[in-house]
Image (cartoon, rainbow, N blue to C red; front, top):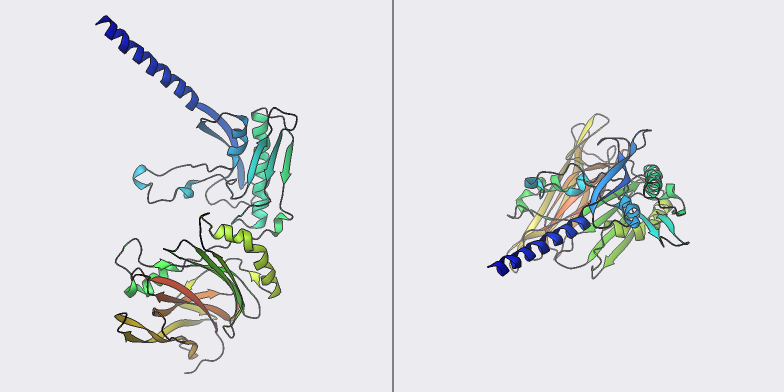
Length: 394
């Protein structure tokens, strides 16, 4: 019995010692500075729009490199209750302004004569306007130097920048067309609550004073493991596509997304926008259904003809007509299309994209394409040009 007790005592001592060693490795407290907005709705360009926040983490990695590299990591604040964690994207709680794709801050060759801290912003992909991004990077630099001082890292600091930070093109912002399209074409929704449609994404880029528009379509190619993103410059007077660029990756093993695409194609697209006199949208927005221009309310109309196909057991479009009308001026046809052996179930104009204060406007038309194996069907978008002033008939 005595030997048995000694055996259990040894086991207990071993487990206690193991726990203490494990705890010691986990409970290292590391502090470092990050740039954050002063408040949720802060204007980052304001004098006091950004401040440096001292963050505290528990980490296995207590090396000096951690204090430098952590400045660009996601920093989650005010996380939701566990019952809501699957319904609210965690990215919404990331307060670290330095968490920008492509921004790298590293400590190299520590404890040698060649040691250095390098802040490399030459390959970043960001949604921030250039001037805001430039200000954020200044605060990132301040945070990095404070982290060096705090952790007694006496190495030279080197900064690698893009050729001209003010000329960096901001990442295009997706226009929310899904909500309106889902309502207007609700007859074609699937019964799957989480996936009423398979949506393509639409990104407006800019427009010219003589009626041209530039935009990007990002296609949902599921179930194929590929990426397809197309960029267009369109004449809104004739609706002719003046320039098109296709970005296609057949085997998406690298999880390429819109940010990767923009990083690779932004320079080429920017050159074409300049060639066609297209200026970026300052604040592109979508106006569903009705539009008020100089005290006239304009509405959209959609008519179509379909025929039944026995081999598919369902109806597909033969033709589609889009109209624009107002009580004071009358109605006009702005677009007609005919189809042959295409699997389009429905087509409807759903709203407007204003081009500043121009009398010309871009009309968004939603198309429902039969899904690969039936519902959920694919929802895509076309752009049609229209003029608020001429061509109407009573």
